[in-house]
View 1 (cartoon, rainbow over the protein chains, first blue to last red):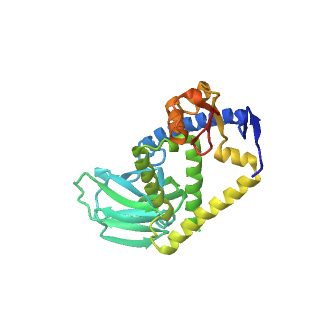
View 2 (view 1 turned 30 degrees about the vertical axis):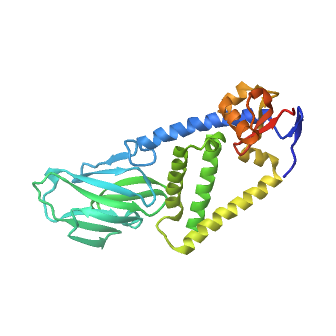
Length: 170
Length: 148
């Protein structure tokens, strides 16, 4: 270690009051940043809160998508499709998810369970059995499998979709 | 690759956080602080190992942490500037029996802390018996008694 000792009174010590005062200033700034991060975290800045919640809608779609625009890697997330009752006409009800999104998430469960899944047009179609008179929603529980920007399209079929984007923290 | 990056991120984050928290944060270790430390270690453990519970993964985490520690100790030895920023500098808080209140307040040390160290290390009874008290980079307080 490079010796930095100075004589203060009778003591040989590497005291540096200028540096110490600068450290205290940096620490105070650090405390303020820490406080803001805690408030931000509680508000959903890192996912799971009001700041994070987002809605995607398109008049042509039979549902509104509620999702978290901020999420965390391998952390449970929920995507809710709020069904527009008037639009739920035919059985089975289809939800199409583009491959760029579907391939980067791991779906843990869906409620209700899809009655079938098949690949088509650069995406996956999940078919659900839904009573047209029911007022409800489809819930997907999933985890993001990438870090960074996660984007994709969700719709009723490949021609009617809405784009969603999520930022996934490490 | 992933596990090494996780360990590096956790190491750097904890180093930054505890530097911001200040050196007295860990030296005034109450039983609650100890519980807090255990919770911190539990939280960081999951972030470092993820869902891979293999022995190899644990070895990689431990090797990365030990490697970083060795690397930083070498860097600190070569750079006084880095050593100061990472470890801080010692500071005299009592001079010839006179507590330097302004510095003590900023360092969150009070006279009770100093007298506790004085009693424990030298069996001193009064502040006037202390020639110097130094708040060390470790967070401990060194006492140099006046020669009788």
